Image (cartoon, rainbow, N blue to C red):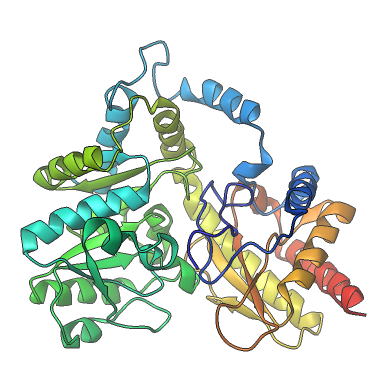
Length: 411
């Protein structure tokens, strides 16, 4: 199922994303709006939470905050952008510099940015086949846009819940023009390869005369795992897409970085796809704020996500949960999955009750496992600024309370 509501839609997404986990879908009935209001009210009122999400703020709150914050990153007395100049051009310049490329182009969506990039690479390589993971965002969340809109064909070097290995790339039975790697691979648990594995797979693709494109929507949060600066990570690829709202808490928008000639061609496709917008300064300003204020905090978020994951595992074990999984066991970024052997509705109700009655929000939405036996569900956790105040003991206590409520609900 594609483009369904999930942990990252505007209501309950981390950092403002709207895409849903693989296989998830809306589970609200006709009273869905009432249920949504109940969730938001509980989350907004919570005194303790691991992160705050865009759906918890009214439009006035966000616009007021942006107006105040933008003055620190751009001269807001100047005229707004018109078709991509002003603050949009400044955002492109800063993004290209951060990632070590000569050029960048702002796009209203990552879906459009990647289609423009891969369509341009297909023309240059003479091969419209893109090798990527079957759990990659374009395969799961974009309604088959690559093939339907851009005449691209996709193939899958591996189905394992990780990125392909160098051996799998070298041994793949058919040619492809572009290898697309999602860093991190969100639907597998925000997982990343090791640095050596990443460099090896890039080299294997180049041995096959393929170009390498990074779906780096969340590339910003990968530096801790790889122990490398963003520029060194990004420059492994021939082009990179990054999002401004999935990690950096912007309003919307994405960028494509790469060689000047490729970015120029992508701008042409952006216009053809309808992405040459008259004004985008609110999104651009919020992205500049994210680069200044959120990006420097990501290492602390990643480090603390590991504290939270360890506290959850300890809490579940002490509470006697028959089976659970923290995926990955040591988070690669500040986001990770939690799996439990219960129905998603029961988990939702236990978490919401905890929020309403104790003012502590540990878990938000749960979703049925996309495969495997029934009665297993998962959620995605993100640790941002509010979560830094949680100790491992706080997490263990919250997990114990959640399990207690879950047991009560099943009686």
